[in-house]
Length: 212
Ligand code: HEM
Image 1: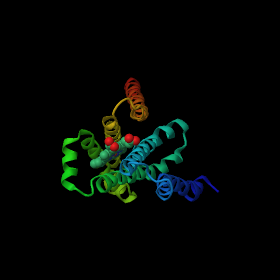
Image 2: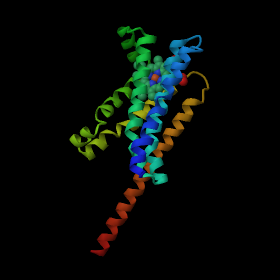
Image 3: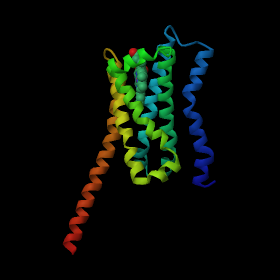
Image 4: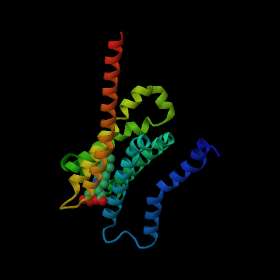
């Protein structure tokens, strides 16, 4: 089997199923031991955890591809990004349905008054255009350059997602710090690549001027 077929036929379906793992685990908890004394909080936090994890996993594709040189990795990026959006949607739904019972005025009040919800909602809003434009057809319609520019919004969504996590925890919980540190490495890698390319371009321009 060649590499393309291996990715299409085996690895992609496998990753797709693996990404449903957290939901399978939730279903098992629901059928067996349950969600503990505060099921609404358990559900919301569990889905929030997976939303931020998938966001970071999707953001890790480019650096891991750059470091390992495995170009095929990029073919998993859209799926992982859409899974991040999917878990954010479930997280938001659990808040809307289980926490707030569709009390839209309470939800609006929360969005306006509780800063960490405002930040979470902004991160969610930034992910919507990315999910909508994730299809191959939309890449063609927008053109690669504009599509790439638009999809830089994911960096802001990642920063806001981590900020939302930082803002909601009380006390000395280290988890938001770990997530923030991972995000800093993933974004730092992109900044380093950008600087390297910019200085290489400047060097080339100087050399071609000297040669002229
Ligand atoms: C990119 C978007 C978002 C990400 C990545 C995200 C992620 C998270 C994470 C990691 C947590 C903490 C889970 C834990 O303690 O283990 C959390 C908590 C929470 N999030 Fe989000 N979230 C996002 C958007 C939203 C939105 C749009 C809302 C609602 C409008 C929301 C409402 C909440 C609430 C109510 C909590 C729990 C607060 C508590 O239990 O005290 N989040 N979120």
